[in-house]
Image (tube, rainbow, N blue to C red; front, side, top):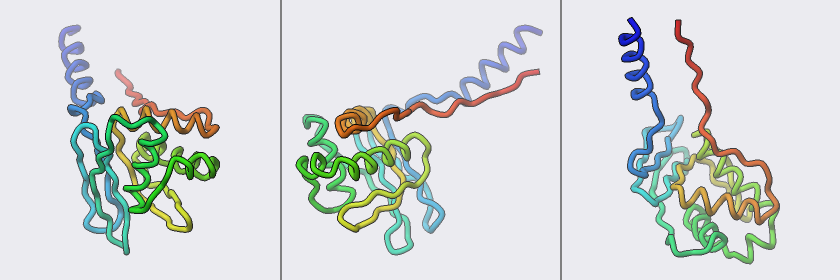
Length: 160
């Protein structure tokens, strides 16, 4: 009996474990068409957002050689398709802290968030590589942010 329970528990844990998929990251388009999931290669950031009512997903590459502030500025530049400088991040700390927090939150929860640049708003979800998470957390802290939790939510199961 113990071996049956142990076998079932092992199979359940393997089926529902959160195992990295070789560093791949994902984001989901919802609820507007076409929907679906965008999956990116290791080291890239997955970005899914609505543009004119239709959600589109893309994979963004940022050089791993950049310092955290430069990395974050480059990432936001590619999301907004506009220039974001390190000076801009340092000048408007409150706004960029909020944007950074929202991207980290989206990565953690899988939910859509809103980020803004000079009146331009982007609504979407993000899947971050480990490097992107590390850099964004560093910048969030540099901009005065506190208490960002990036853990995956716990799954509670009840066994008889």
